[in-house]
Image (cartoon, rainbow, N blue to C red; front, side):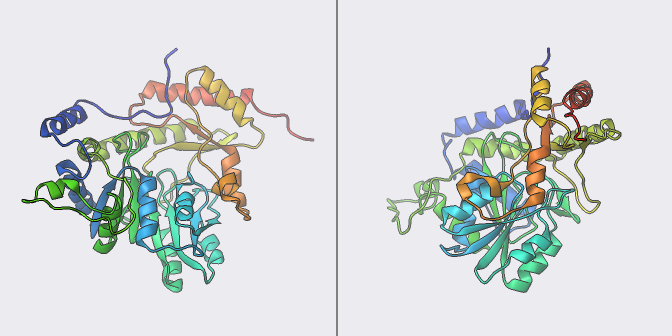
Length: 380
């Protein structure tokens, strides 16, 4: 039986040719010519003051917290329904993540929940473009302006999505992108920090290379420059190999997103009359990058049973994403009931640009059958 993977990267001959160029250049490491060219491309794409290519989006979030001078004792409000990288980043700098509940229909952070969590210790908000759908940035920015807070846009899943005509990644003063293997544009691993303020980009770029900046640049100087380690930095550089791949991928992004959107449209048609699940909602003022396709199962359906049945047929499936506040690592004393419910009943089904029409039909049929086969007896 043909397997239909949950995710599949759209990498091919163009990307291989770009990697071959890096091999021929003799500089495969980070912050070299390809990395610098990628940063120029990202800066122009997002109309930013600076763009810094890094090893992954988690590193970009960490660098953002450092550049924004988040300190122990500070509180940062974070969207709850997401892979919990934002909360990790807040904890990395000794601050406290405060989890905000989300909209039931979109899974994006609820501005009313954010507003209710602001205290004198709050310094900022990390909004998340949930699995590719931008959050409510007008409302969030109004809250931030009212209280003197910054916003970081976690656009890790949303490269190519738009909110009111503006591209995800340009919706806050600092944004982070991911180029992980399941994203719309990928280099396997990779990320970027996008900043309106060039000073934030400079801070992040220095810290991403152990605090001493680009070794490639220093090698271009006549003489013998000896850098000084004036502060603690990190090894968060993106390799030039990854940067070269991303140059190609970003050039293909509209094509790849269009193919994902076609899959999402067909899933919505296939499940339109299905009472045992709910398909994702996309408000009219934004577009979705479709990093994932997560359906919400009726509480009468055994989600584990559905996933087991799908996997037995070679069809990839996943629980969806996380309710961050219930993760033991954070020992949170909060309750985010909507996020918790979405976490308990979400099911991710195959979503990528390489899905064929026949595969999408097969997934739809298999899901519908699995729902019926795994419906729990209703309580009297």
